[in-house]
Amino acid sequence: MDRVHTVIDSPMGPLTLVADRGALAGVYMDSQLYRPPQETFGVRDDEPLAEAAGQLAEYFEGRRTVFDLPMRLSGTPFQRTVWAALQEIPYGETATYGELAARIGRPGSARAVGHANGRNPAGIIVPCHRLVGSTGELRGYGGGIDRKERLLAFERRGGTP
Image (cartoon, rainbow, N blue to C red; front, side, top):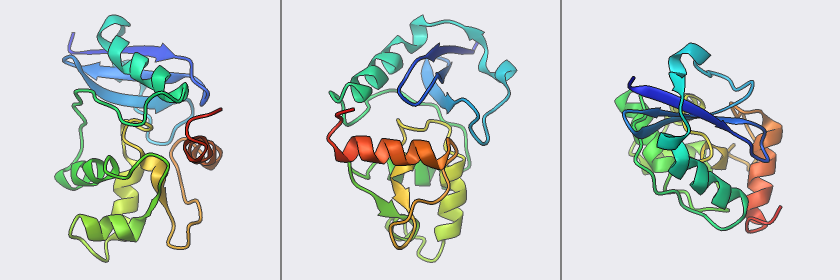
């Protein structure tokens, strides 16, 4: 079987981790927008996802600010460009949708960046929570605005709960 999954506990609630041929393919929160159907996650197998689970635990313990995992994220070339740029936003900092659009050479495409951000299959690890509106306001988040606010506050405090 190419795809497997596990479920871990986190301060954001249960997280479903999905691997595709040994690489991380998804991190999904309960009740997340655009969460794929459970049957697409494959069988439950904790072992291939042990490293991802460990790095997430370190993040929530305040001991990790950058993830280092092989990933196989499915998306359009534009989406993958946005997701790569998200990973360049430093821990504890934010960027606006417009700033990210400019960084990827697509000024004026803030809305398209927002759509790609919303389709991010590996939330937290690909830090889509670090994107904010043009005046710093919190805008949509697939896991819910309350989780986005909690993740940003957690990182601003330097990883202390």
